[in-house]
Length: 389
Image (cartoon, rainbow, N blue to C red; front, side, top):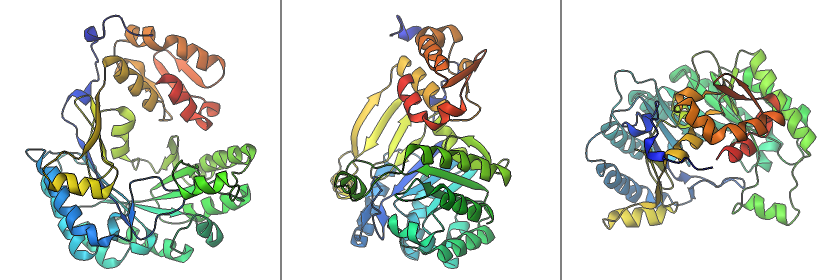
């Protein structure tokens, strides 16, 4: 249903129309592309690091002037795959173009356990990094082999301890529902995780994304997903076990100690805008979404030839802004106050019929202007989001 006069909408929380206060920079380099990974990743091409850094400098210069931000997130790929010289050069670029405000809350860097060294952690800390997100995925050696990870359980534990001692704020990712995994094995992973000095935990069900080797193996019956009943049990355990250790479930896939929620990701879930740079990076500025070319070689070539790295962009309408605000806001366990999206009567005119349908089938709950997922809706959150969009 379209709104009759979109231009008349008064979005009371239209922070996306203000300068963003968050920035994401993508580092594509990895020592190995895992079979489930569908990100913009480049393995075995460290010869392109210098060219990438030169291209990134060109892209950042297109901002015109440094942009002050409250949160920074460096993802990949594996940002810590850089050697010491390249890491310093990279962090200098990021610091110069995205200086942190006086209200800055977070500077996160993703890392793989077998790239963590005391020397690299010291460099990160010197540049103001105050949060490390480690791609652990599992503490089970056989499961790590299935996922094609290159670190061992002991390397993961050591990396967590080192990061906690140097940086302090440590998050890890874990994957569940891998082929042949049992709920009991997943519970062991969770218990191993919460016994370590974590402040944040992200838990993701394995998906078979088109274009990955796991997708191809699935089609050839070389891999098989586990049954849905086990997936649901694992999802519930991913909530209860961290919660018992003080890690509160605050977003569909995320759990944190009090005050340790990922502030940067909150910008995504609240739709308030962010800058982005690097191959495949997606920005959201002034209501416009822009996505860079995913190919690192294309990204480098275009920028060094004086061309734009953007592959596609779209100016969102007011209706799209409302739908996205609601859909992604619903990922947070507390849900979303529709009055923060726009005038309540406008939001209801657009989405009330959809809300009622989702409430009737047990996916949503609503109290006044507050809408949130039910426990049943949490398990199929992607389907609920697609209904809203």
